[in-house]
Image (spheres, rainbow, N blue to C red):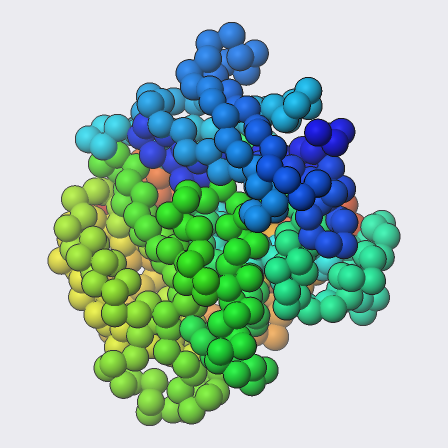
Amino acid sequence: MPANPFTLGVASGDPHPDGVVLWTRLAPEPLAADGHGGMPRRPFTVAYEVAEDEGFARIAARGHALATPELAHSVHVEVCGLRPGREYFYRFRAGTELSPVGRTKTAPAPYAMPDELRFTTASCQAWYHGHFTAYEHMAKEDLDVLFFLGDYIYEYGITATNLWRQGVPMPAAEHGVETVTLEQYRLRYALFKTDPHLQAVHASVPWVITTDDHEVQNNYADEWSETGIPPADFLRRRAVAYRAFYENLPLRAVSLPDGPHLALHHRLRWGRLADFNVLDNRQHRDPYPAGAVVDNSPERHDPSRTILGARQEKWLFDGVRRSQATWNVLATGVVMAQIDRDTGPGELYSNDMWDGFPACRDRLFAALRQSPATPVVLSGDIHRHVAAELKTDWRDPASATMGVELVGGSIGSDGDGADTDSFGPLWLANPHVKLYNARRGYLSCRMTPTALTSEFKTLPYVTRPGAPVTTAARFVTEAGRPALNREV
């Protein structure tokens, strides 16, 4: 076994009441150009231990897994037999080498009502645009789960033009081109995952993960590529992108891609407190109406259009209708609230968001209204912090609010940002939008049986390290009375 194969850290994810999935990847030379991390092309046995204490005196589970070159020597261990609602610690051993210790937590028992759930959301971590200082602060919070809402990597070539992260050397030449091959996608994950703050958050809390577009290519929709790649060729690219996504993240075996097909949407239940519906917004969506990302084409309103695909729609609508939890939460890559981008008498919408699929959104809202649970939407994508109320009639500000949407800003994408920017007046012209902030950061939440407190955490800069974190806004939403009540 090569020395120090755990350079990419450890991670856990998808917490169930009786277990979690544990991840690591053997890569003594993580940035080796061939994408294999410096590992010999043969399998290696990796041992794992799960304990109730950080000193590993009380072992709860142990076993072995096989790290194979076909999956870039990644390890995905689905641990079961653990107790619900408990903190655990885990580690791996390969030969004589021992990994860092990770902390994780199981979900509560199915019929338990937890006093609270502390969670955070993150998205859009363009390594080359800034330091992951947001993760440095996030790792210090006492969290139960992290929801990652897309754009774990970016496919663009990294050059002197877009490398804004100060104090780091220019990546090697192989990073200067757009990712297309399996080796290139593997290498891009490795580059991002060498960040110590990202590794620290992975090691401190279980992640629940979905994708947006940059894990494959900007603005893709099913087999449609915005750069005109023929569908058959694009599906081959999607297949290797999904393969690298699986290899580098704490996902269960059910998410091992079958060619260009990735089983991604799933439901996480946190006792009777919340049902979390984790959505896939890219793989099954219809193409952009009239081929335009932003417009107001009548095609938008075609009732057959879907952002989810028929199978995922049925799964989601059946699930949210049946929910008896206090909170009905949707984790989605793109913004769900209607945002009219024309501040005059006309209308203009981004078809990349749920605005491109208003009939599908209407069907979803109808299903949500059939459950007593309070709807909450968690989203990312736009590199801005936004808080919005979800209305039964978007054109009538006085209409009933049926839920709230919390959009977390980016971890690093777009650099330092500002408190506002040229898009601020556009978004705030929509009266259901209660916050717009263009800084980097994340969303930190405390959910109880009676209220959801959401804090939008921001940083003044990320192009250089060491930024402090502040709470730009705090909202309270009462269970059964959806609204954004601002405290800060």
